[in-house]
Length: 158
Image (cartoon, rainbow, N blue to C red; front, side, top):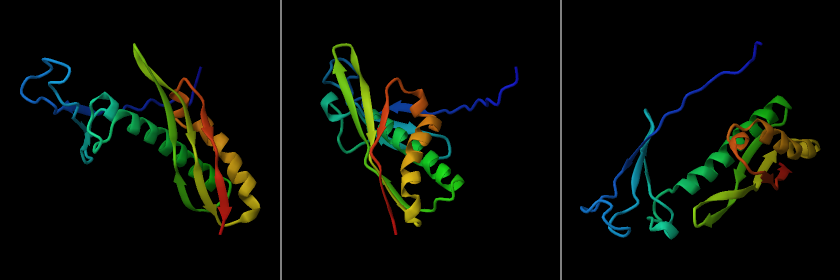
C-alpha cells in the first residue's frame, strides 16, 4: 500500500536550572526552573506554573501547550484562507485551556480558541468562519489531542 505519509522528527533539550544547592532533598528545597533549548533558536527560560511552586515570570508547560494548539490552528487557517482566495490582513487569538488537576496528576479537558480575523472581502466572512473547522481537521497538534478544540471566531472585513 502506498501512502503520502511523511515522518518528521523534532528534538528539544530541557535542562533543569533549579538546584539551589540541596537538589531535590525536599519538595520545597528546589526551584522548578529550567531552560528549553532547540537547536538554532533562542533558549526559553521556563518554570512550572505558580500553583506548582513555579516562577510566574517564566513560561510554563501549560502555557506552551496552549500556544502550540493556538499557533498550529492559526497557521493551518491562514493556509486554507489563501487556498480559498480569502485575503487575511490581521489575525489574533485569545486561547483558553481548561485543565483538571487530580491526585494522580491532571489533564487538559478542553481548549477554546477565540480567533479575531480581518479580511478584505466582506462577502467571504461566512466562508472565512467555516474554515476554522477545516483548519482543526488539519492541525497536527489538534489531531494529537484526546479532547475537542472549540472555536468561537470573530471575522470582520475592512
